[in-house]
Image (cartoon, rainbow, N blue to C red):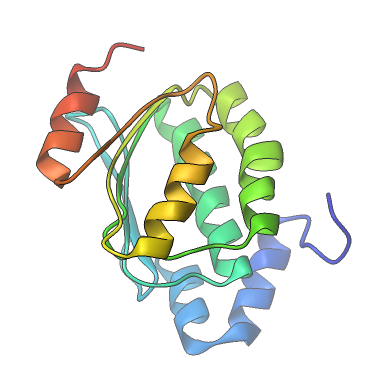
Length: 157
């Protein structure tokens, strides 16, 4: 892992606790906080993540590590993202998602994703850049969350 990046969830949580009140709330409750909402939906079956605002590097990595935990706990192969409020993330974090997190998620069973496209221009550019490199994941983006959810439910993986 890169220098200066936390190696464990405990380190991530400790740093989040010092970063901001929003980060502390994220570490306290992944299901309801100012950054995002993450939960398991047995009807998909899969993990649902709703982005609420910009995420710092630590917040973004923490959310992805929690996604990975939930994939493992539930044996989930699918992720549904409400990316309406998702904003741009820098290339370092994009590379981390693709080169570090994705291989671990694939090993855990992640196979398909559907999302509602971000409302903002830079959020759209970011998600398109990441999604274009998510091989061998089956992935689709939609203008509305209901269509994304329906596609993901029907997606066989």
